[in-house]
Length: 303
Image (cartoon, rainbow, N blue to C red):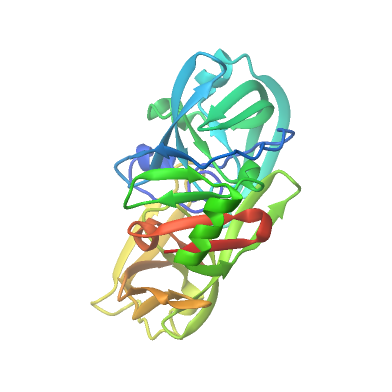
């Protein structure tokens, strides 16, 4: 799992940004049926550049959800869970990227549809901050593991792939291995091997974070001096825990995929922080690319 605000990595500042830091949880949902043709669903973006998809709660309640590959578990606003007559189903405890513990209440709701994907009797989590910032919910990748999908950031469309369309994606892009962090068959996070400057790292793939965050343990090997005037220090208090979070903002020479070094971000501005992962690669890396995730085969395709 990840998010800085809801248990794994995330951004700071106002509560609206914190809302992006949630997890998504879907247990007990049926597997997706393979579509005969690829289905493309246009998306919009919020102020942080996150993907916002139309969805349907039940058979008649249109909502909008954030597609967050780093969320781990799906979350809906408490008001929507009440509207859907959600039934309590225990809780799930995970950890944010900063290492603080987060326990989320679980509920069973009758039906949720996103694009061609319809799920019934699914278990989902609740987070009251979503109601406060007027966000409906967040969808993660747990139940997309059997349905390859593409986020076309320049084209602003999410495509639910078929075998044929997926084969075309492979011809057009670079295929890279994924590592899965599957926690108790409840939460799922995706990782890939990157190179930061000349340092290898296993990083979270996170379309729910605007920028890239790197563990402070890389600072010395990358030649980053926290006392340098070129490094900006930022401190803030976490929304939920109240703990002080310190970030160091600066530029690194390059961030690239280890298995596809030509897929690179040259001289990116990143933040360093005391996190539990090597790094979290956010939207600044992905925003001008086409990203296909084939979780069942533990692969992604980048163009």
